[in-house]
Image (cartoon, rainbow, N blue to C red):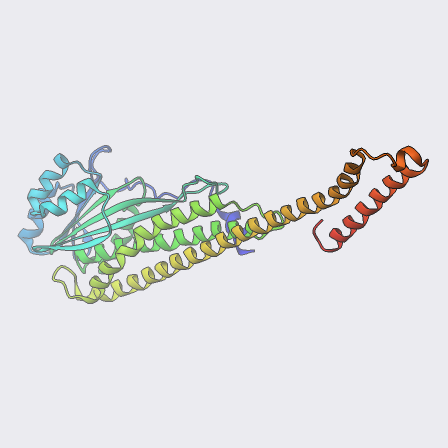
Length: 361
């Protein structure tokens, strides 16, 4: 019942977050810099400032931080920010090239965190080639007075997150680490949403496998396992970084944020457990499907064997007529032929009845 309700309210199009166009600091579309803003005591400061002016303003006052958002920057587009904030070359290379595993690295006086974002791909019916999970990346550079987010992929927009944080100044007042926590929380919440949608697909496949029609194909089960593996690759490596952020003291992370990272780590553990459970369930469904195929093949073989046994009787009797005997019922006895045919029919009927009673036919 719950599965049917979930299907009824599922949106026909992919659920993508809108692009944040509400702030005047947004650069023209098509550039890498999505947003650049100064926050003092958790409040966004008025004015449209480029990155160099914004960071000079913060460091001159000794209060607040700069949050710069970028989307798929090239090396040339990122070069000015790298020089301005003194970002480590290895971290910059990872941020530009993308395709990184989730991780947390400490470079001098900044943290570099990589998150894998996931999105559930809507589909009317799961097939052998359906894409279920789409992944992207968010990289976060966190310093004492700046946070730089670099996003890769067509989903996972941080515009709504920025607006949400700006509505809670007391949280932003905790500094750049509050943004890092918000990004981590958003990413893990998306994991929870995706696992809930994947569970619907698993329930559908399971229902079809155990239905009277038994139409659940092994191809769809393998496709789900492949997509589940992609989800696991996005989720599992993040456990270590979340534990570090939740337990290890770091200069770039406000101690008051540590408790919130523990909550994110707990949610991540729940997602990991669900993925493990899904994989085990799919293994069981696959084994049940293969068992059903084996049983069906055995039933077919029994039916074939039964019909072969039935046809063996007339074959054997009629084979006698092909031999060169002088005294044969058909030649020297008027009722010989019908009697033989009656015996054949009776024998076949008795054998058929026996196979039918034993469930072979």
